[in-house]
Each structure stands twice: as C-alpha cells, then as structure tokens.
Image: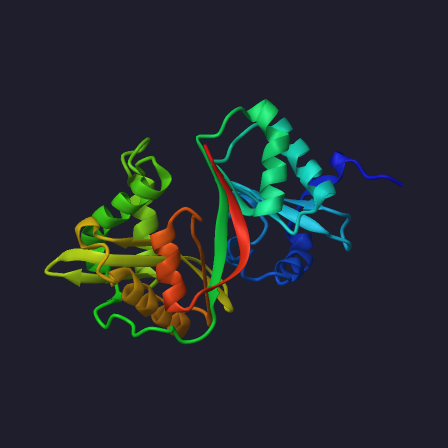
Length: 281
C-alpha cells in the first residue's frame, strides 16, 4: 500500500519514547530537537512547537520540529514530501528551515512555490564535532559569564546576531525576547566570554544540549581584534568548559564561505561529520 503526504501527523506524549530513540540515531546532528524535547516534552503548549511524525505509532521513521525553526530529522524523500505538504497547508510560521542538507534542500524546493523567496539560503554549512581535548592551548581568560554581566555581554551578542543573520534581534519587540534568551543562557552557565576591562573581546554560547552532546553558537571576536588568534584560543577554552560542565561532545556548524572561522575550528581540532543547510526568512 502506497503512503501519501497525509501520513505526516502531530506527535504527542504517547510517542515520546519512540521519538527519543529516533533522535539517538544521530545525536550530533539532532541535538537541537533532542534538547527541546528532553526539556519540554511533546506537548505543544510547553514546547512552543509541534512535532510532526512520519510513520505509524510503533514504526516512526522520521520527524519534523515545527516552531520558530522548521527542522526535519532523519527525513527521507517520502517524509520530506509529507512534511512539505503539512507545512504548505499550515502556512509559513517559522523564521528558518535548518538541518541536514539533503532534507532541507528538498523541503525548501517543495515549499518555494507557495512560500516565495527566502531572504538568504546558506546552502553548505559543515557540521563539526570535537569529542576530546582541543589541539591548541585554551585562552585562560575565557570563563563563564556571571549573571550581573548580562548587560556587558548583550551588545556583543547583538553585534554577532546582526552580523551573522543580517537582521538585528532588536527588530519587533525592541530586543525583549532576545535579552531574555541571553539571560537564560548566562543563568544556566552556558555563556562563555573573555571580558577585559569591562569589554567583551571574545564570546560563545552553548545553545542546545543533551547529556551527551552540546552545540556551540554565537562565536564572536571584537572586530578590531580579529586576526590575532583570539577565536582559536577562545573557542578552545569554550570547548573545554562545555565538555567539563555540559556534555562530553561539542558540536557547531559554520558557513562554508567563512574560511577564517573554518580554519580556526580546524586548528582547535574540530572535524566535519556532516553538512547542514539553513534557509532564512
């Protein structure tokens, strides 16, 4: 019997064990979705998103996280068509589609006729991992940011976000939600920085984490200090802190055209384990 796109369904707490088992197949690539479900479960009101499944209960093949980000997980061609059909009928509610490159590219190809053009497509983003000590000495000045230093860290976070995404996080609500997110990361001990004389010169955060994998994001060096090796030693320090305090495996993904960052991560000891694509709206 042939399945159609209607096979995509909204998952609920009865599917939790099966969902978590599926996410364990690739804990590095799927750490974002796994971290959200571990912390909030599958109830939409708590998660702030729906999770769509492809395959009947007891035979779950793939899923798609549908919230501020649309994230296909373990999605082959049939599942991608199912998720595209549901996303098309629902209408665009996300600010990005992100995940494993083949699935995201196929999903976006199917959605383009109804969703229109994207603001940007980052077609090739190497997914990197470090599961041991870094290959270079970490910067001893990098440490966890303290709760009372949120206002010191925030301008650097805003600058990084604007430079990377192309839109300021202050747009819309004046930055209220973004400040809350930065504060949350600081409070959780997942924001690391080197702060010299009250000024951030390097920073990075861990945005998603399970007990086995954490994902570094927002790596940033003050523009006037770039090219001096701060990103290499700083990232090494952030990785050491993350491995000791959060999870033993550290991952991140980077735009393929950012050759300086790719060289820095290679020097730290990160190796490529996959490729992501991000579609930004």
